[in-house]
Every structure is written in structure tokens, then in C-alpha cells.
Image (tube, rainbow, N blue to C red; front, side, top):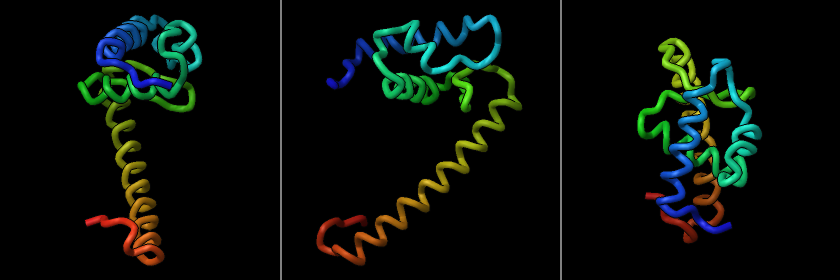
Length: 113
């Protein structure tokens, strides 16, 4: 699949943000539903990229196994950000373990310094 252009990302960013903000139920929206309503996304992978961009811009979007939700509830945001930090720490440990294996078994292959 081709990379999204900056114009496509901007359009999709606006559509996804508007959908999440206008969610009248206040609950989570499944990724499959978002992709169905915004077919230009094409798949959940592109949706995750757009959600990541929105979060980097400071949009208060949380997620769980139920889907995505725009929230201004500080406790929800704190809980989600704490969970995200813990996942990042665990991913960092996994990365370090893989680098260690590569360095021990193929030291000339990559320079991780």
C-alpha cells in the first residue's frame, strides 16, 4: 500500500477527530466502525497512524479493547497515559533484549551506539 500524502493525513485527521468529538454516546467507538464510516482510511493500521498523529498534537484520545474515545476527563487521561508509559517501558526492555542477542550473535551486522 502506498504511503499517505500529507494532504490525505490532514483530511483523515480532521474526519477522525470530528467523528470522535461528535460521539454522542460518550462511549468507545470500535476501529472497524470508524473505518466503515471513513472508508478513505482503508484499514485499522491507517487509523492507528492517524490516532497517533492526533495524540502527538495533544488531542485527548484514549483507547482500549472497546475502541477509541475522545475525552476531557483528567482521570481517564491519567490512567491511559500511565498505561501507555508502562507499555513503552516493556517494549524498551524487549528492544534491548533483541539488540543484545544481535550484538552477541552478529556483532558486525549492526551498530546500536
